[in-house]
Image (cartoon, rainbow, N blue to C red; front, side, top):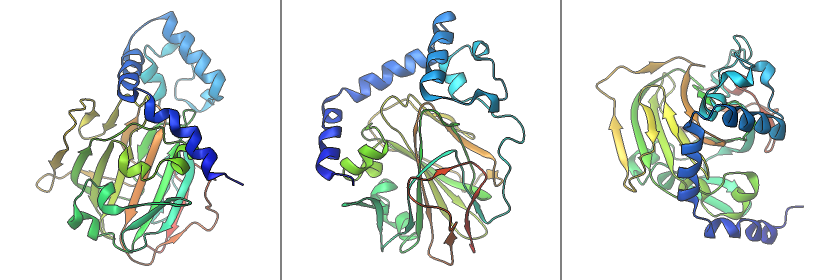
Length: 285
């Protein structure tokens, strides 16, 4: 049984850590070409987190000139078959939570909820499109493949960078920090689709040096402390189901929002279950 007090005590040091400074430092190291030092660090990382390099398009650890290039490594063709379903899982990772949005409230962990408005950076009109809708929160651990793909085909309409904290996003922190995913820095991507709008929010975390998207490149850094927004209604940026849409540099979380309607999540899904890119996420959309 999880002890809420233990979780709060476990995350207490994170309130005191210089998270922004640590993240900047990690970003500099991860992008540096340090030769044997980089190869040594990657080798240690692979051993520590039991990374399955046999799935990588290039399994040779020494072939990666920077830690970032290793961390955002491509997979072999066919390593993640795409299921035939209205919504597929967009990442490798684990299920944090999923289910119904109750009015505008998203379930984070026992005793913790946050609003759709807070998640998308305060835009109540955007959030209202997901009133009584559906959500899924997926956690990417350091060992996982860190490219994010499209759960359904969509046309990009907006992207919002919401500045915030950089708490860890592991399960213990999710249980111990109120409103974690609406509190951390995030990049909110809004799409239109044949079944209506949907949102992918890429949530940053401690040591996550960068978040990138396929159409923009590096979104963060910089970290100016002020929200930034890009509008794409007049452009034609369309991504197919299963197509890459973004990348994390180190582990983080994706929160997805879908509108009210007949959506049925995969009956095999449950909180804490590992998931893989391409598996069925939901039907009847």
